[in-house]
Amino acid sequence: MYKIINLIFIIVFLLFFFSIYNYYSSNKNIKKINLTRSNIEEILKEKTSNLTVLVNDTDNVIEFNTTFSEEIESNEKRSFWNLLKIK
Image 1: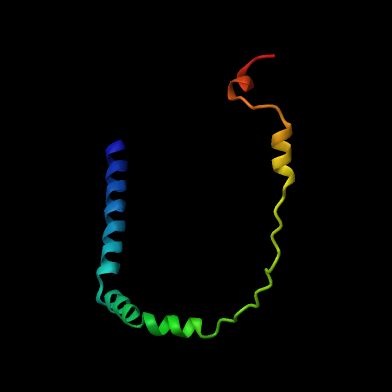
Image 2: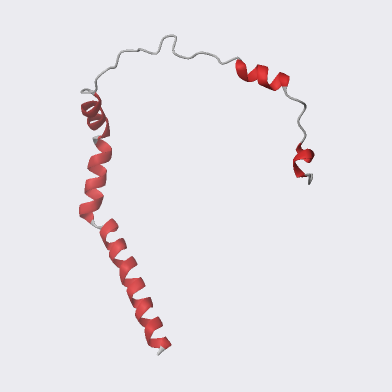
């Protein structure tokens, strides 16, 4: 029984890969790929020509937070091994 199931799986597996190979090696697919590769510059120009340019509104947006450095200075020194100690 297991031999029959294994044989069926192998046949399905081979048919799957054979169909994929047939599709990718077909003349229709090869022509389509070559056409797309040759026209890639035109496709990119067409897609980028209609893009809108956004106004830059990020001037003086980032503010540096100084309180974090003050917290570090006020705390006691840290030690990794102290975290592992049982209290």
